[in-house]
Image (cartoon, rainbow, N blue to C red; front, side, top):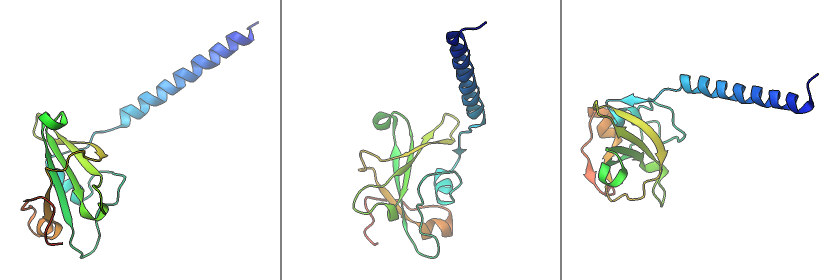
Length: 142
């Protein structure tokens, strides 16, 4: 006959094994988003994020970019954002780390502590040509 302590231990071990199994199953299905062109992925919403950035329709908006360097940010990469979410503060940024193979890996959405690297580009230029003429600083012609 098993004691209550033995039954409790068996239930605890079973629960831990079940949780570990679920965690490994969830981890196995998780994929990392990579792209050769993080700007295209950002504008075309090619990966899941928690923010609704772009004004959809015919209205023009500004894309923001900050190039990230290992010296200031622990890795080389790029941070992208969009003006409609900024208001009177800095907005969330989509952070991409540059990998050794030249592709970019989506890391996270977070604020940037230093936005002195800010560059801007109009979405209508990007959508019409597939590239941006980046201008340093806050856009002057809103």
